[in-house]
Amino acid sequence: MNKRIVVVGSCNTDMVIRVDHLPLPGETIIGHDFITNQGGKGANQAVAAKRLGSETAFIARLGNDDFGKNSLRLLTEEGIDTQFVSLTEGISTGVALIPVDDKGENSIIVSSGANALLSTDDIVAAEPLFREAAILLMQLETPIATLISAARMAKHYGAKVVLNPAPYPKEPLPAELLEMVDVITPNETEAARMSGVKVTDEGSALEAIRAIQRQGVADVIITAGAAGAYTATDGQLVCIPTNKVDVVDTTAAGDTFCGALCVALCKGEDFTEAIRFANKAASLSVTRIGAWRSIPYEKEILSTLNHNS
Image (cartoon, rainbow, N blue to C red; front, side):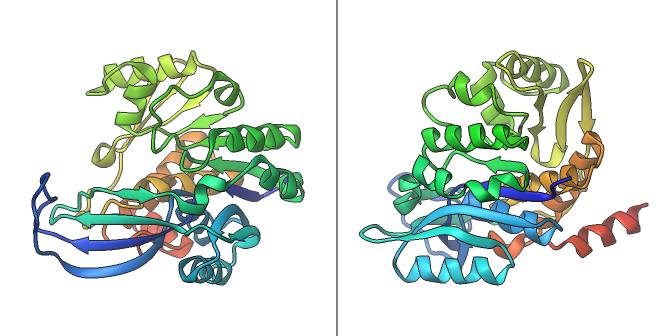
């Protein structure tokens, strides 16, 4: 059985600054503890998958600039297969500006840069990766047409397709894409956008899950922060709680969850147990500041699991 996770997606350089509160329109505030960190939902998820125990390959575009060269070097040092991460002339690497308040909440402004140029040709060139893939993991910071091409290739080679529908686009996701998705992982806001159901409690979570399933996705996981995650088995809601922790920064929590989920599924874990593992990883990530800096390693999660067992 193939064990490789292939991630198609974005790679950014994050510029993070701590603030007392998120600025209001027109407001200038003084921040502190500025850091430059690697990020981008695709790169975050690839790093999470690799650190948490799976062979991982990444398909992405970077600018041929200092940010891009540094990102490529660091991805390679993580042990990720980067042979299909391209440095692109004439455009900048993606960047994100992230203020984080004292409660750990954040706002994120992204300039896509080279991420917007990831194309179907890049997917075709990376076909050898798909032949050995167990799971394709994608997000929505790169062109939809490229994701459709990647999903089609993954299905051709028998890989499971996992989609993190973030950031959610202005237009509904095309049926052509959703019909190829095996697992989708919206948060409460994204689930409401997809389903038309505001997720406020267990009843509305189940209603939203059923509405998304009617769009063609068999397995839906709604991530709900401190409340854990919701899914449905045999039409019945299942709530998987998470650890209560002191939140420092939520920037990479969702990406850590997705990477961890795919690792557990690759290892043949039961679906509910895979979500439980993903919750553990995400809850640990929010206790640290930054994107890559916050993503845990497999030994840390196993230690937590053993301690709580």
